[in-house]
Image 1 (cartoon, rainbow, N blue to C red):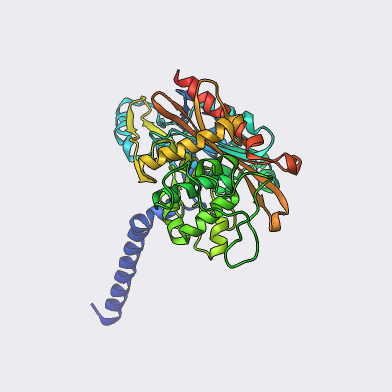
Image 2: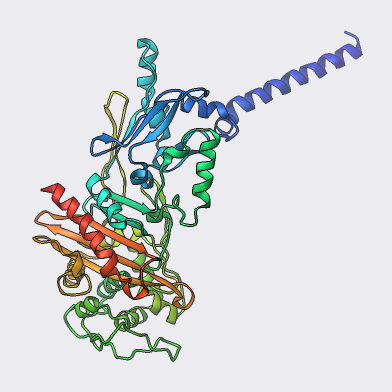
Length: 485
């Protein structure tokens, strides 16, 4: 072969080698990346080429699939009472992908998960149409309905947990939305989604998991736990070293209490019953910022929580002395999700043991065989059993004859704590109404609840945790307790 031909042959060989390398790189190295790109329409078409499996509550599907006409997507997702379940399921849209359980459990719901390989292989031989599996939730339908009914047309959120297992029993966020209105890929679906995104009330925001609020006086149970755990106090009925007025450290500003309440040297039980800012602010200052952070970490603060849907981290910050004192009563830079405060109430109700919150009880194959069953998992030991029972006594006094009497349930022991959290610069906005609680039966506590209400329509003087939030918590707890009987 002469020299020019040899050069051409070598050049062509290099081109062929480059083509082979490029092809293998795209097919194997970048395959997953290319498959998941938003521009890859074929993935979405395949996702809706057959009926999705369902998300199950109380043994019944709260989702479904319907055939579409005039589209390359064969099926479209629908919901039964979409606004009620959207905070749990999220959405699944032909045009706008998916969120929450619809996204995280997509492999099971489409039938593409590796756990369903045997079912897919068997279907190739039997000729059965491909089907998705089901996701069985921990949700309690009666508790969820009670939460939504209680919130009504107000902005807010409710989270209910089973303290003994961590199972999420209710997860409500209002205002809510119907995922069905933009489940397709038409102009009408796009317009419906755009309207939701522009709504000033943010109906697509999951306030239970993704909104953080100042917890107000509900946080005083955490400060009380820190005081007991660190030996600052051990007798909940003994006098505390709490002068009145008490001045915020490094300032000349007295920390005010609401109304003419007996806070001077008040015991822990009495200070929680009437919600003394001065007692708990001084308590947080006496403990110091480091010990307060250590205690909040044990309750789950300062890190994200996965249920498996991600919840934003609740923050108890590193701060100076006056700010730490204010954070100890749930103000300043102290920010928390409703889920986090339900975790606080849950750990106290469960004698100090905090369980990992979860909302997927089972995953099922299309033939309804269980391929996954959740096992309760301990997240941390938030406080000792002895100290947890002391805080329980304090919280039960709050409901028996304190600020939380509207949470009482006849024949049931209830513990709780109210909170009215300041909002806006110099408390210029209407406050948030909080209530955290648990109900107790002969077999321990089956439910712990956190409620937050943003009621912009109420008169400022009418906004309180005991008035707005406690009745909602009561109805959610009652729904769970009644269902256990």
